[in-house]
Image 1: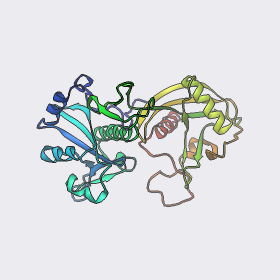
Image 2 (image 1 turned 135 degrees about the horizontal axis):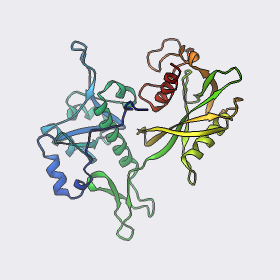
Image 3 (image 1 turned 120 degrees about the vertical axis):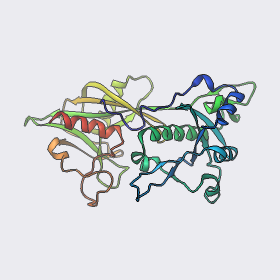
Image 4 (image 1 turned 90 degrees about the vertical axis):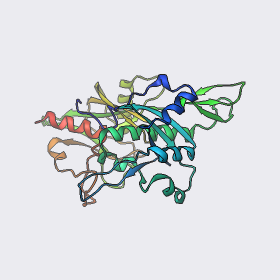
Length: 320
């Protein structure tokens, strides 16, 4: 999986050593090159594309006075890191009503990164995903899980600290590890096929690799085998790691694997999977794309910015 996955390979130096100290952060924020990425209710600020110049959408960075103003109106600010001498920050505006936003963001709009991320420059999309993940965590981490007291942001937004002096626990950004896997099987006819499932989350027939969260006390390989068996009735072996992708929608780290199925008789868990099938490479050549397909009954492949699609594409390419 050598090609860069969306939301990976970000250009930022996260500069963890510069997160502590209010004075140091204030100096970074006042830097003439400082850029601020506003987030509103899990939506990132994006500038629209220009059809005349054939330019696609871009990240809606705020600089100068606009950056200072929006920071003053934010519920939290997070120092993300430095790129090409410019400090980058995320700010959360979720506490504002939508009608108040135009005065703060210079005419750009807040968009769902899952819809527009594939259209952005890869470096920009990576930073916006980081900003989305951090601000989402801050909105969810408002109280100490030990004592119930309110928490407050510290270390440039990378810690939520309990305000109860008798507790003082520090809470850190949450990331949930999830395995995602392409299972293959060579049938009695000698044809190599992969196992894909149509999730109950989708109204249209989008077939994807199986996936699930890692449980306490199990290895990643064990999680792969368990999830495949639970969702499809297929016993998986020869589990090999293929790559990873942050997926902050809201807080997952997708760990990609390939596995081999020992049997081919499928028995799905109907609470999670509408249907699962074995597909050959020739079968997948007839599939439509996640975006833009007009036939509601035509099977579709996963979105192109996902590790699921990369796992499928890598397997298809091996048959060339």
